[in-house]
Image (cartoon, rainbow, N blue to C red):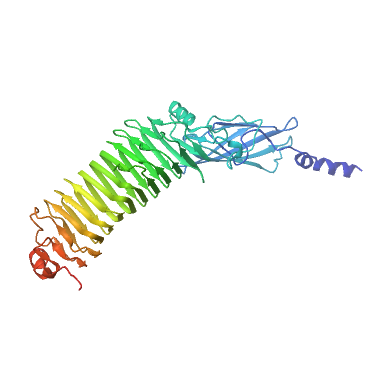
Length: 472
């Protein structure tokens, strides 16, 4: 009997631990996100027991820290950045034995606000916790509207807002700070007529991983003031009305798909800028309208690469117009198609570099390029010009462009199809039109140079080692 009692006493700590409750009495739910700081409290159980806490903090920058506590522990992002937290809790009994560990994991995201009008129906909304105090704007207590989140972000000097569902805007949003609006899978911004974004001078707006829709409007969706910055990344847009008006700022569009519909007979550019810089990479933009113009830049610079620009016009279509600026394009396809007139690029008093791309125009009358006092280089580029009334690859006033290793094709029934036209131009420099291949055109450069005179044209303007060709 005594041996049996002694064995029972030896097993008593194990039995006690088997009956202990989960030690955390206050803290975020397992797997949740919070802005922090977090105060963990525990219940050690019977008198004489203690709970030892150890938390591993893995910061976004890669720094890993360990912090320790007994019965309670305050945890915050010590570097003020996104932090993954794993807490281990062990109970020590009066005899010094330690229980098996209990774990709790969560994320502290101190610089990010969340928006979800109906959070309980959102996949990332954590289970309710009666003992855990929510943090305003955190993933555990999101704002019901983007407007409220932006106001709070300005007050608290926060820079990042995530949305998790479809968010309707209540009115025009004035951005006067640096802010990034990101979407969690399937998130969308629904823009009512007359609404959009207004960037104050010096402000910065980022839109990324979003779907943005506006089904009615004639004003630009985004107006960017002087010295402002706009960043659109990994975003799908369907916009009725102009997309962007820039007035002395900088913008970029990355890895995005944008569809624009202009419901007016006026030639209103979908994207316009004055003394601004715009960089478009890895994106596809399609514009449809009556008299369609995709980009109109007055001063500044336009960069485009690894992208596709489609412009459709019921009467006329033009892709790019640059005045007093610079255009630098690589691996870019620009296409214009219209019932009457189609043009790809207009440049006035500007510098143009276009390499390894495709330029195509389709219409009754077509003109791939109009270059007015604009030095330009086209290298390794494919031109496709199709028109039944009149067609030319390039109309030149003043400085003649350089064409190197390009392929130019004409298809259609126009009685006259010219590679170059412009009698007021002094003509090409020696070697500046070399290594090209012309097909289907009737004339190389106005009346004095029909295609049949290609050999003489090469003698006058081509590099002897790289003559132009015209397969018959």
